[in-house]
Length: 119
Image 1 (spheres, one colour):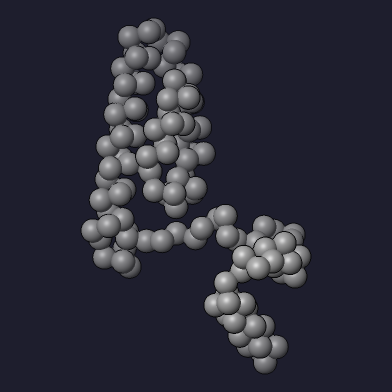
Image 2 (cartoon, one colour):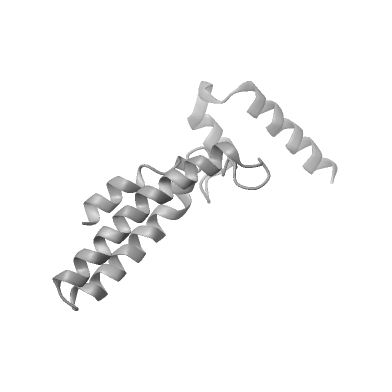
């Protein structure tokens, strides 16, 4: 069931999945462990309910992402793949990225450095 749950979590938008997938999976596993002791019928009901909830939740997230006001739910949460990990210096991070860093990012970085030096 854990495998099915992990696969269904892929239906969610990436930004939502990056922030909430681990917590959703942990909650599912804890609930499944609790219900497993109450018998198979209870466990199967929980599992089916959770799997249906994952599918409907993913649909709701995609609908909300594309139809809501941009300030509320049509968000673009930070792309964690593009963020500099803690403890990695800016120079090291951008040196590894090399030519893959867009010019706009480098210009924004120089502007932020300038503003920081003026403070």
